[in-house]
Image 1 (cartoon, rainbow, N blue to C red):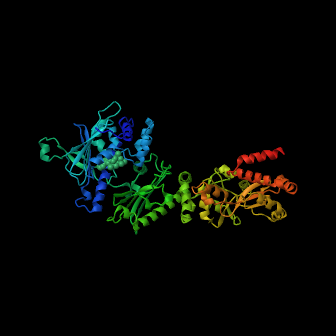
Image 2 (image 1 turned 180 degrees about the horizontal axis):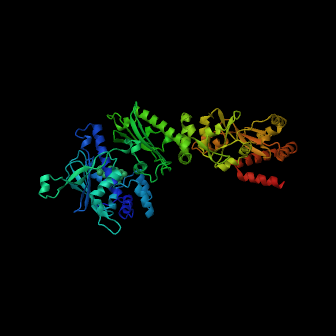
Image 3 (image 1 turned 135 degrees about the horizontal axis):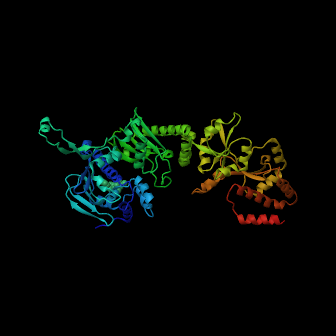
Length: 626
Ligand code: ADP
């Protein structure tokens, strides 16, 4: 007997000892594997031009035998050879949901099991209801068949066996009933019918089971007092219409949500579903979902964007990346289209039809999001909390190419009330003479609010957008202007009035001296009365702001040494100005210390890193001691 791999063992343990109440989902899992196996063979047939594989020949059967207490689930799909049986059933597959399950399988509590059950739990779920499982399988095109058999955690065996045609029969030896669980119900015709209807109605191949039918008696037979004869006939139970092929009015919210949870392994209903049917130059149906939470692996390298692509009901690829732009990578869903199918999986991704569909889908997602913003503000804000960052990256990484598409979906927190505001809302509230959309960068909304420059603007009744994500300012630079208004960082260099120009000229010698002492750290030193009673402040001129410099410096290449052109602004209204003027006249050699302290203090107040903090503190002490 062979042992299961450790990871598999853990999940298997969970299944066997499951106190999870929703054990009935095992049937959905096994049937969905059958459907996948048929898809694989059907697709292979199309691709390689194999004869004798027409759609109508494929079926899944579910047959109960009450005497033997077995439930047999069969398909005539691609089947498994010896290695497949070992690899697929001996080791747990490494799909995203499974990786999640196994990583979290340690220390699981009973409550967590219901969470797991919402994911695809896969083949091992058979052990929730069966004490022994036999898998008879013959791979398509091979001569030998094999039997995989296991009673659970101890291990499994793989033996040669006989099987006539390709495909797989899974025989479950149903557990005896217990006080808590009535396992026998899985052998009842009624139960099987209702489970298939409930969970597997949209499977695209017929799922057949034996149904008892009573033959009608002829008049003569009735006269003779004969009993009605019952016969078992194979009947197809599922409607075989996938959800996305139904019209919107035919689908309930429960069905939409259930399909989403089962297919995309989420345990929360989606934030929004988008169901479209398009006829025109290309024909397709799509069922798209926006998750209500950030997928657990969304910001990891493993996350792959893409939509499931079906053509005429057959799954071509699980994740067609070309159908979704990166900024909508959080969207999950299915696209079913009548594409020409004599091409391989690789080339289908390049096809022109697909490009048209992709661009239609992109527009559709945008318009649905705009609708949500307009009509369901609260939901939109939640959506934006989750995926807004992605949209901002979209604006930035397209070098502004996507700005038309994305700019109206962006929101920032307003410094005046801490609530989200869109660019349009900000711009619409401006008067004709207002030229700027102000923004400030900091880690938090309060951080922006507390920048003295923001406070000044807020006092004047102007709002300031809070840029709290690193990408914000970079993205906004790509947009440039909005409704004719220019974006302006509150920390950009103050524009001087006439009076200021005058004092700056009068004190040119002092200001040049300070700039010289700072050794290239600043581009300019100037006096600005707008600072009022704040002694100093650091601003920047040109395209790169101080915040941008900070973000860039943390990049792997250190931002190629790109620096902001910093301006040290000093308030002529503050007593410190009088002090440095005196020092400049009487003890010029000390001006360097003053220059450095003022520069360092203003850097610190912006949260910037300071080169030699201990030297700085020594200098402060020295000056205090004087
Ligand atoms: P998943 O379906 O999420 O990959 P499962 O545990 O359900 O995980 O199944 C593991 C693997 O076993 C499948 O990926 C598939 O390769 C194989 N398998 C399971 N059932 C069948 C079947 N009926 N026919 C062919 N292969 C199957």
